[in-house]
Amino acid sequence: MAVRFQLVIDCREPEPLARFWVAALGYEFEPPPEGFPTWDDYWRDVGVGEEELGMGQDCIVDPDGRGPRIWFQVVPELKAIKNRLHLDISVSGGRALPIETRRQRVDAEAERLAGLGASYVRVLSEEGLDHYGVAMRDPEGNEFDIN
Amino acid sequence: MTRADAPATAENPHVLRAVFEDCPEQVLDNDGMAQLRDIVIDCSRPASLARFWAAALDGYAVAPYDSAEIERLRSLGITDLEDDPMVVVEGPGPRLLLQRVPEAKRAKNRVHVDIAAASVEEEVDRLVGLGAKVVERYESHVTLTDPQGSEFCVTLHRG
Image (cartoon, rainbow over all chains, first blue to last red):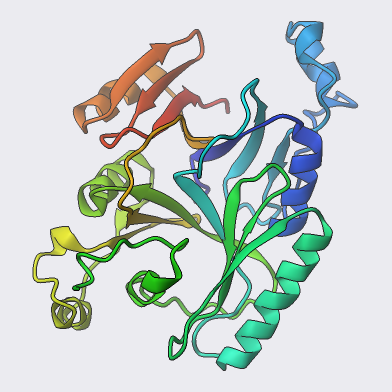
């Protein structure tokens, strides 16, 4: 059963942010409908004005069909405060694995995403707690966690 | 301080224990491949908001509490499940984690959920019946807020 919802992320520049999330989630750019070389061709065909075209690719999908489609919507305003909805990326493999293995996986993923434009916020761990995560921000400042 | 008093936010390292140990473990050995596992929503009353989102999303339900979980919560001073600071809603896609945070909502979210429906009007009526409020109606979609003020949309499901 596919999910019947999508996530919408406000942004200034959709394509660079979409590219970041493609890399972060193992997603891919949503291909344009059949018969159209690009999404702009499609939108033009359905009557969308030129002023709304030329923004590049702004929709990404899960190739496995499990996760929701994500649309990067251009908005005029900048991010002002912490989001009240954020994404958690799982790479650790779960608590059955040794904490050290999980830490290495999380750190490696955080480093990879930092190389793609994410920034570190903090390590989510504490003495005696069987959990290790890293809080980060995407290239436009949206918070997310890697666990 | 009991967990019910803890400001359960993943942003606050002091309450990590409350957040992560409250989240039922899922066996998930994905060999380090990144996966969108959870969508985390900050709110003031997780239990009631979890019921709303479970009803709103096709195939989703509030994760059941087994006796071990109830006992674990009790050991942390939580006797009423309505006070659980982190409630899980699970379904065919990523889980929704409703987590209690101390701060109130102050600005429009920059991330929101769009629900696709074959009939926008019928879906909006259903969600309003569950406690959502209509913000604005457009030609092909309607913007709403959930019972605790987070924005979402109902859009036409094509195909």
